[in-house]
Amino acid sequence: MPKFLVRMTFIVALGAFLFTACNSNSPSSPSGGGSPSFTPTPSFTPSPTPTLSPTPDCTTVPDISSTINGLSSGGITDILGNDASGTPGLYLEGLGSTGNIFRFQVSSPMTLTFSLCPTENPPISDRDMILAIRSGACGATADAAFNDDSCDLLPEIPSFHASPGITYYVVPMDYGPGAPYDLRILSGPLPGVVCTVTPVSTPQALPAGQHLTCAAAYDLGKGSPLSTGDSVGTGQLDDSTNTDDYYSFIPANSGTVTVSLDCYDNGLNQADFDLYGFSGCSSGTDQGPVNSSTAPNTVFQQFNFNASAGATYFIDVNAYFGGGTYRLTVQTP
Image (cartoon, rainbow, N blue to C red; front, top):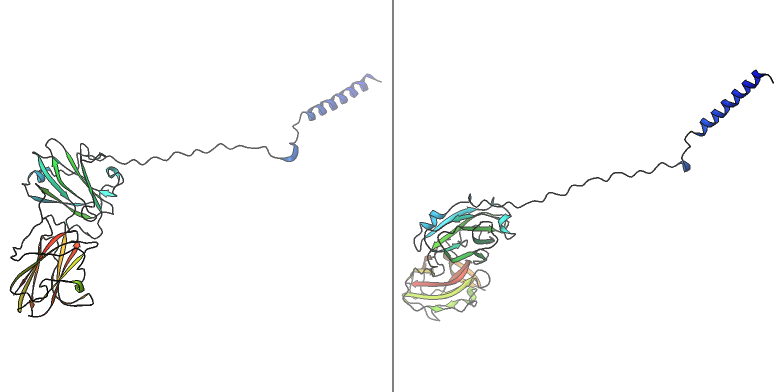
């Protein structure tokens, strides 16, 4: 074979070899026709930021020291507050939803009573409060004194002994949404009930819970008309179970009858007792009101009415708020 043909044959063969070799180095198709698997990077979830209860600044709370130190023994002052917008949580340790803080120091040893029981605290029918006194720090968890439900659902801390050189914190707290309130502070010993009338006759003591309606009224005259003078009854009431004491009497003479109620409050207005008069009773239901006395925030109730000789009249002593003893005086013409 000529050299030229031999050379051409060699070149063609070499080209075929190179083409085959290049094709054999090409990537092959994936087996099975599936896509390659992919593992995503896990997402980052930040931890929630804890909600911290603020620590109260004890130095900025209202200072009532001058008011307290200005009280003489037996003196009373009122601190008007409103915890509707009071600081929630924090120093209350879950006891109340809102509250206020007051601070004071005494210049000399004092005995003090702190009361949220005054009947002018609205609305007393469903108000639920707590009272604490603390020292050292207003956010302290240890109380120097504490009370809940002394007067129904309202608190009172009686006869607290305060010493000079110590900062005390008075903390009223409210279970409810909060509202205006009256914090009453008394200096000196806790007084007894205030009695206004000076009766002449001997009091007749009523057994508790036996004269709840006019049908079960206690007869002041014990079957006889009452002549000129006074008749006195005493008893004990509360606003939950033993709410009323009914009396009946027949005046021997026509004229003005005066009915008085006292000895039920100690001057801090912790009890609200009311007085009603009627000219009749039917099946235990009062009939014919003649007069009443229901003034709040007082230690004394009284009314007059014109009575007819020989007619039967009924008096209802009602515990609207609070509880305790009372004295009823009926002055007949």
